[in-house]
Image: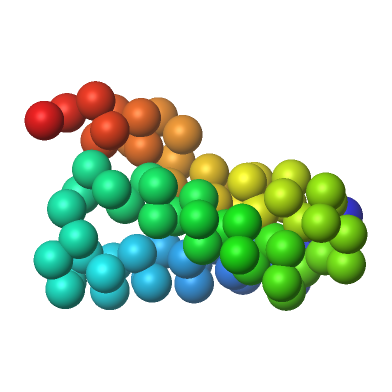
Length: 77
């Protein structure tokens, strides 16, 4: 399912989200962007099956944002 070299996608997602933040993305939207990017990488790059790609993409996106810090950013004003 998730091979060890695919874990390298997590820092890539973090870097892309930070790039978006530099261009004005508010911090509270960074977890959403991270999960969306994880889903895209999971479906397009990692897996052949859409179901498996969604699961892997969610794992990648949530790992990149950190479950606790992501929900904390969403709750803050």
